[in-house]
Image 1 (cartoon, helix red, strand yellow):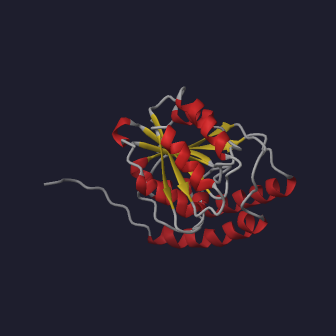
Image 2 (cartoon, rainbow, N blue to C red):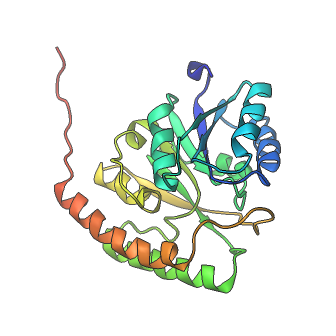
Length: 240
């Protein structure tokens, strides 16, 4: 993938999503035809044990805007996203989950605002999840908001656009994907949220239970507070 040709890269983390990948290819190709920025796609295979890797390789072989990296073993969503940030070279980066409960088409809505902000995140309207998932997510978002003061109603929404210079400065830690807006604020960046569409999962299985959505984020909040206390910022005044 010749990154210089592109302005925006969409990271797609994948873990055992063989039943969704044909739809992912179709939806992303449809989006590339209407994207407001010249767009590339980067799959990050998080150690899948099904046929996801073979399908990803086939998709990339027939689409020049698609590329991939593949982990030796499962490392989790936050690691997959961070690896994507470290790999891409476009001015803007976004990510979307491979379950397609959000649509790539809504990237254009987020991209409209990225000029004046450093991160634009979606807020899932009319969420199409079961009762337990909805409630646990609302509680977890409330807890995170209380700890981070980021003002975001849905910080875990899997549809975001970030300026790459900010994304690459985010340190690696478990739970990263739930704290992306807060991590941009630590860099004195500007963030905003925009309502987007949400859809039921039609294939594959959710990878996270109540522990991951509720109790895990609570523990991560304490790690964030430590990081906030220790975080370093600097501005270069001159170069010689």
